Each structure stands twice: as C-alpha cells, then as structure tokens.
Picture (cartoon, rainbow, N blue to C red):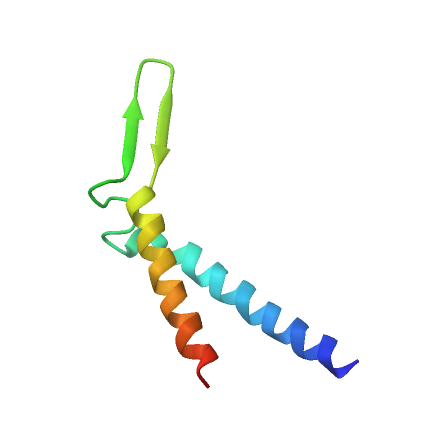
Length: 71
C-alpha cells in the first residue's frame, strides 16, 4: 500500500501546480496569444484554437519528461 500513498502525494502536487498555473496564467504575456493561434469571431459564433501554444506546451512537457526519465 505505500505505492498508493506516494501516488496520492504526487497527484496532490500535480493538482497544486495546476491550480497555481491556472491562477497566474493571465499574467504570462505570450500564452494563448502567439502567432498561429486561431481566433475566428463572427456574429453569433466564436472559435478559438491555440494550436501554436499547444505545440509549445507539448514540446516543453516532452523535454521535462525526457529529462526526468534520464535520472
């Protein structure tokens, strides 16, 4: 059962990190407003897809996990 305890602790830290990130995401100047992020607004329709931001976050997370797995 100690593995479950460690997993819950890690999950808790992940939730705390996500909460902090969501709280301060508006303060980061480039997130969601990069060139290549799609934003279409019509009379009764708005479509927003942050494709460039998603790619950047994916590359960053891949790098972090790759560095973490090398330990």
